[in-house]
Image 1 (cartoon, helix red, strand yellow):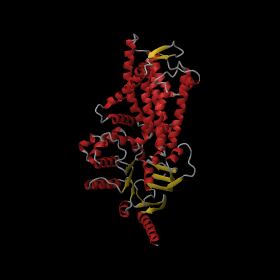
Image 2 (cartoon, rainbow over the protein chains, first blue to last red):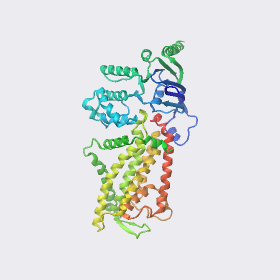
Image 3 (tube, one colour):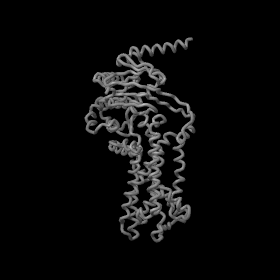
Image 4 (spheres, chains in turn blue, brown):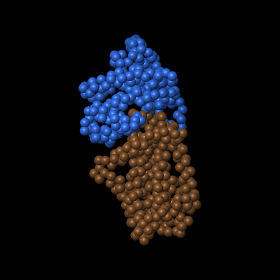
Length: 249
Length: 279
């Protein structure tokens, strides 16, 4: 019907805060009675359409990370429904999910299998990834021997070269030295221009404005505003001001 | 219900093989004699038990076995213990390592989308490779033992290995569907498993004949699935007995298998979605 690539329907997520390890052990067998909870997402609903670039803004602890984890399929909601219709690449923690004893090349295949790619397709993009990551002969060495910069480069190269349908980007992304950083920024722009759906998480209002025409503002797990970025940021700024004023009083 | 675990395995065959090979490399890499540790450690354990019981305590030179269906006979202690302890090494590793697996592979659970139950499969497979290697050495010994006692080197009963070994793999894989998520949830559960293991060894018929009891104990021994496998391997290589000859034992085991299987699926499904939050 609609062309939504990501759909959130009344999604809620509550983390249970166990008092101590005993409580956690007990919870394996008996449901805890009125435990302390933290509601990370509260009845969140929205749709993101193919080719859209959407910013997600909010303070720390607003539920941004939980939201992204759900889109990438790592975390699951307690209530509600999430539909993601396509391949998701995440530029969040680039060095995560590597198998340290395997070579860079094997890790490319591993990551490809996880994303459900076929051998033939991975072979096609393999060289592109190695070239982009600037790893040279290191590609056949175990990832354990890589410097942290090399690991990030490989992680970035894999994620952007699998031709994702959805790209999730955290602005606080560190990818090594300046020249590679520029290369990454260019690549992200290229992906956006190619019509890939992008989710962009940031504290920085300007960079969101630059990339995303639409933004969602989260506060304490609730969607406060969802609309054109200018208006979203206005609401966000106003709230920040009101908090500041309260403190002054 | 089972479909959740099955679906996670669909299309991941190659990945599981790749990771199980990698797991094996990870275990033994960095040591000078590398893969030989897979043999040295069990060999030393076998030596210690043989020394303690046959040389030290001097009592256990021969083990009398009465299967009921066959005439009672005796087997020298070393051979008896050796055939039983080979599956035990696999069982011990499967229970202890199997319950720790999700915690040690947490990067696949909390950082990327991953078919979590396949973690248990590929780590299990890497243990199976080690077991098969040890089993080949054991078979070499069995042939040597037979020939030196004037028996034919091969026996049709040996073929039952291809029943007992996969059954053992499946049974302890299904067990880990329960224990691994629970141990990931609670470190206490993991410690509990580790601390009861040496007790379980002495409660199982590895060093002694679990059939050699009467009354209540005789049936209590049948409930222990480890006995089923230790005796199963002896069925193949020592007792010349088919797995279906002792029906009570086989039926009890199958019933336990079904229970462990269903509990495993239940516990896995119950805890799977909470894992990323607690690890």
